[in-house]
Every structure is written in structure tokens, then in C-alpha cells.
Image (tube, rainbow, N blue to C red; front, side):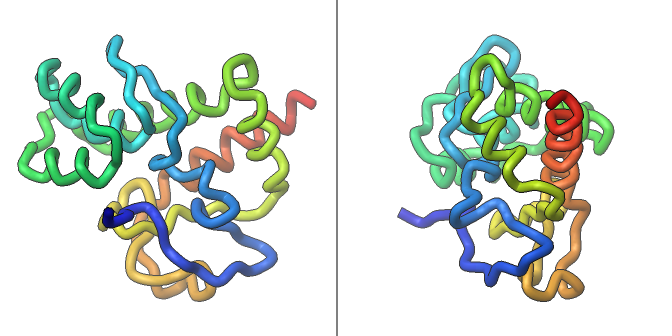
Length: 165
């Protein structure tokens, strides 16, 4: 099975990516997300489903066991008019808060805190330059392009969690 959310990236001391030992940061990690009453196996499934207002399609996406199959299924779905950068940013923040919730996932919260003050980058193979970066690696971040909204959202959540110590 092809893996879309994995990549071998050389590590450096000041930045981390959402893979390898930090795969729990990836939207493809199996930590359920509930969106509009539907439970999805991963954040990536929920993000894919959020592109459409069709509840039957959302439910269908939730039933795929892996991200690759869900991604293939959604390739022909055109996002609705609601799919703006502002909406996507709020949605992503909501999903991050849900995934890294002290009451439901204390282990994930602690692991996120343990990343310290390192920059977090979501360098991905999904060609997703909104949530992450594409076209390079963490060892040479200057060759990447994208908004890295997932990385920024994770760093924002981590800062809030570290403040609460």
C-alpha cells in the first residue's frame, strides 16, 4: 500500500517534521476526529471530508481504513464555496485542539509538549501547500514552498499547553 504521509527527512536540531519518531504530529496518524457528528479515523480523513457539504460522501470517507484510499476517492471532489483559507484555518485549529486534548489524549499532549521550542514543519507528499510544505526537505527548508498551516497550528497549540504548566 502506498503511503502518502511519510517521507525520510534528515533531522536537524532546531526543527522537526511530522514524520518518523514524530509521526503522531501527522494528520495521517490514527487518532480519531469528529466532524459534524461523523467520526473519522484520522485528521486527514476529516479534512478531506470537510471539502464537501454532502453528508453521504462524508460518511463514505469516514469508512476508509487508510488515508490513501480516502485521498483517491476524494480526488474528483471539488471543494465547495465554503473552502476558503479562513475556513480551513479555523477547521484545522479545531481538529488540532480535538486531537491534542488533555482529557482525551494526555499522551499526545505530553508528546507535543516534549517537542519544546523546535519549529514544526509538515513536509508532505500530498502536494498540500496549505497545511504543509512541498518541494524540499527539512534539511533545506529554503527549497520548500507552502503555508505550513498545520506546523504553525501545532506550534500555537504547544505554546498554549506549555503556558498552562
